[in-house]
Image 1 (cartoon, chains in turn cyan, brown):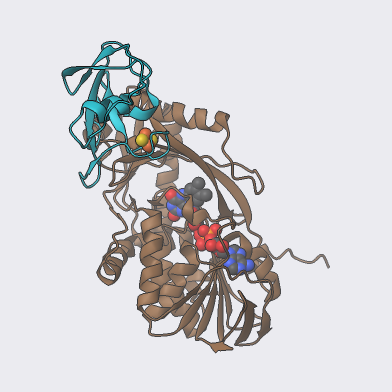
Image 2 (tube, protein in one colour; image 1 turned 45 degrees about the vertical axis):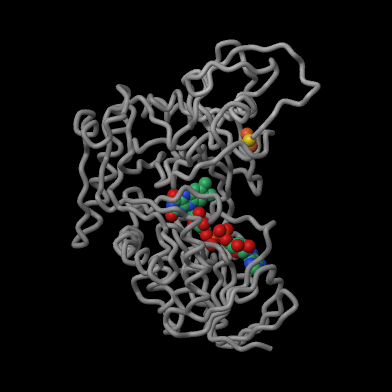
Length: 98
Length: 371
Ligand SMILES: Cc1cc2nc3c(=O)[nH]c(=O)nc-3n(C[C@H](O)[C@H](O)[C@H](O)COP(=O)(O)OP(=O)(O)OC[C@H]3O[C@@H](n4cnc5c(N)ncnc54)[C@H](O)[C@@H]3O)c2cc1C
Ligand code: FES
């Protein structure tokens, strides 16, 4: 659904989107990486389990919650990708270790 | 001029509960409410329906609180049936967590006092050791020494409660008028006329349910209502899978999964902002009680203003100068919502408050004149 702009830099780094190694330009956000390589919905809501995806891409709507390097409920649009980063969908409520 | 059976001023939890209660009796209330700039405790509170710290030395308050808490389940069920809106009310019992032997000793003495003062109402409670509490709340940390428990405590979502009350008010034929700040009242015994929001309203009954606004409104109808703001700050976390099966005095998990951590008590005038020192103290105590919170994200914090009488008790009174005018105000508007809707509304329409509420009269503020 999403494509890179024609004038985006040619440099690439590797991140893992739901376990798949993919390449994205450095400076991308985790949410953008998900949109480019994910399969539509990037999270399910904690209350009703509805599928959702990033919306505002600027930190206000919290629709982009992702699990990043094992940390749940991160706002993916505010996190810049890094080499080897593991980005996963956030499914429902996070679990806590008691 | 529009004629009603009662004018209720203030569209927060208190005013709306009373207005809904009046409409539920088949009468026609109008609820006049200020705009969005108002101080509104009902939108910033913690949501406990709490019994176990109410009424030390004032058994009347303990009983009135208990009565509301006993009514809440049915009250919530009725709102759901009438409006389709769930209040999120649950009554799994609640605990006050103690982090030192001194805290637990003090708690034990207070609970014993409540038990004695309850008399025939019977106030059951338990003082739990760390091990006993751990069975109920497995997430507690090693610093928790023990807790007091009663089965009367519970919690609800105050915003859904407000929505349900508003919807139920309208459903029963009540009228809600927003952006109608009341600046003056034309009062005569059992006859009140108010111009607000560009309209005119008249009724034989008037209820002041305007929170901190009651002080100024009271003066207009001969009622002394010395309420002042007392700030509380609250921390809200991301949504988690269920970890807290019951509320504690300073922490509760909502049905949606959020954990709320509260709440401070500060004299800050009308300043309802937050301060890092207080938030820090709250967070520290929360993490000591439940160490898993260390890794949990805070999504927001806020401050809100309680509506507090000098002695912390509710104020219920009918004006002797202008009979028909009542004040209804308290610092636990969630807890008492059921009583306000079911009982206070009835007393207002009956035109008299029962002896049961005499302890909450404004007479307690009258200073004896020196001879
Ligand atoms: C931080 C915090 C935590 C709390 N936690 C709990 C809790 O856990 N459990 C509990 O039971 N209670 C709790 N409370 C208390 C509870 O929130 C209040 O008792 C309750 O909300 C008071 O409701 P109210 O309707 O009297 O006042 P408000 O919510 O302040 O509403 C007053 C309304 O009156 C209107 N108004 C004022 N003046 C006028 C005027 N002149 N004309 C027209 N309208 C006017 C305002 O617009 C407002 O809508 C807490 C409060 C705070 C601040
Ligand atoms: S997409 Fe809105 S906060 Fe990230």
